[in-house]
Amino acid sequence: MHKYGFSNIDIRKDSHGIYTMVGMRDVWDIPALRGNQPEHVRFPTQKPIALYDRIALASSNEADMILDPFCGCATTLIAAERNGRKWVGIDIWDNAKNLVVERLEQEYLAAPRSGATGRLAFGESNYVRETLERTDDKQEVVPFLRPKYTYKEPNSKRMTRQEMYAHLIDQHGSKC
Image (cartoon, rainbow, N blue to C red; front, top):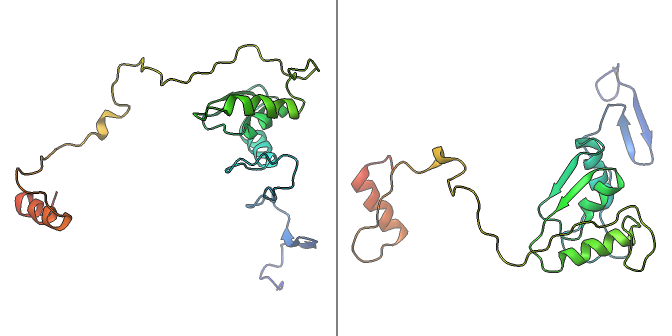
C-alpha cells in the first residue's frame, strides 16, 4: 500500500508541496495584492487581476459580455478587456468612471486623453448621478414569496420582543 493509502495514485512533489495530477485543483494559487504592487490602486476591496483573468477565461467565451454591477476600481473590466470580452461596469461611487478610464489607460487598453493609441476608444460612456426612475410595471419580481398573512401590532403600549412573542403565541398558537 502507498504511504497515503492509494497504490494507484501518482504523488509528486515540488516547491509548493506534495500534489497529485488532477484536471483542476480546488484551490487557485493566486497571491493577494500588496500595497507595493503596480496594479494596486488603494481601493479597499480590490482583488488581483490574475483572479479575474482566471474567472473570465473559465466562465465565458471570447466576445461574451461580462457585467460587473460593483465595478469600483475596474479590475473586472480590465480582465474582460484583456481576454477579449465585452463588458459593462456599474458603480454608485461618484469617482468610479474616472478611475475606470484611468486604469484602462494605465493598462494600455484605452487611448489616453493625451492622444496615444490603445486598443479601446471610448465611444459612448454614460454617467448618471441621480437615481433612475423605475420603468417596469412595479410588480414584485417573485410575487409568490409575499407573506400570506400580515398582523398589525396591537393598539397598546409598545411591547418588548418577549412580550410580542408571548402575545403572538396566545393569539395564533405555536404556528405563527
